[in-house]
Amino acid sequence: MSRACAAWAAAGGGKRPVERLKAARRKHRARGIRLMGKFVNLFQSARLRARSVFAAKANAGVSARASAKDLATPIDATDERFRRAIECGELQLYYQPLTDIKTGLITGAEALVRWNEPDRGFLLPAQFVPYAEETGAIIAMGDWVLRTACAQLKTWHESGLLDLRVSVNVSAKQFESLEFVETVASALKKAHLAPEFLELEITETTAMKNLELSIAVMSQLHKMDVRLAIDDFGTGYSSLASLKQFPLDELKIDRMFIRNCTSDPDDAAITMAVISLAHGMGLNAVAEGVETQRQLEYLRTLQCNTMQGILGGSAMPAEAFTRFVRGEDDPYGSIAALP
Ligand code: C2E
Ligand code: MG
Ligand code: MG
Image (cartoon, rainbow, N blue to C red; front, side, top):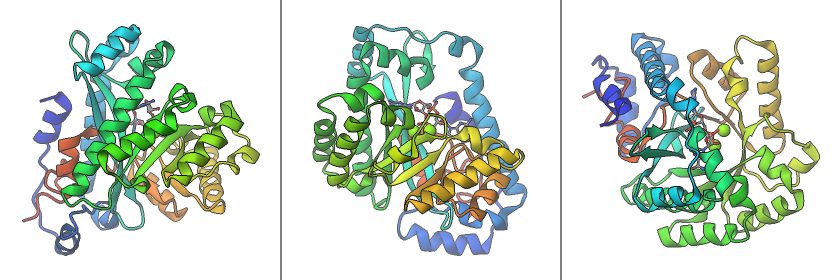
């Protein structure tokens, strides 16, 4: 068991029954979906604070694990080494909940790749994705991520978690490769998954690199009914004239702006402007890196659609996500503790 999982398992939380939450849980359990944020207002309590504290600790754990030594020593691996990692099953996908701010329902997960490198231990994407991109191994890695995420989502659907979607990050090299659209179609077909359940996240920088190509590729994916999001919005340089030519579904606001959106007037203004831009263009606004109740409340007042961040759950392995979304394994003690 990884340290993050051990910390999670250890954080059982209190067992105070709360009638309103119980009733809601029963209703939503029937659909196999976990309720999260809806009762956040009701839970300005020790339990919610415990949850935030846990989240902070879990994050600190990950940071500590991947701190100094690890982050200072990225894996400058060869193409061959990356390919072996895929073949030997050293890669793993973690899934981070995406929560509808209005309903409190977990509507999906972002798939985030990890590498259990035998000599170096657990590696985060920042330590190897740039090198995989450099060597070109990112194409094979990206294919693996796409196929694994689609297969996992199909498993979730078959287990009754019918409304979940999965979001997959797409690197620049992958997006520009001639086979990309074909690869996406093949992953969906192999998993017997309807395209509207898959969302592809493309960064602003990737999308703006070659406008003509981006519009062509996105249009093909859009025609297939695959959902499209611009990731880390606000950190690259976008032209709004270009943005409107992309057939998008979502804008994901980079966590750089969310971090201080309740304390820095500039970040507050940027967050408000991006949400308003998304809504004006008929797109969903997703806030990344939501860590505090205050941030969530601010986003709620701006009618931001979706939140992602440690407040709603850190990235976790597939089995843990299954328990989490069903409310069976609750690191914060807010749901699973109820009889
Ligand atoms: P991203 O796509 O913007 O993913 C969100 C990142 O923010 C994840 O980091 C996630 O763990 C982290 N995060 C989410 N909520 C919080 C929070 O509340 N606080 C903090 N401090 N962090 C939070 P992760 O997993 O390390 O991934 C980093 C980046 O690596 C991703 O950013 C994405 O650009 C890239 N990446 C991850 N998986 C893949 C993949 O399968 N393929 C490609 N091409 N890139 C990937
Ligand atoms: Mg992303
Ligand atoms: Mg992002």
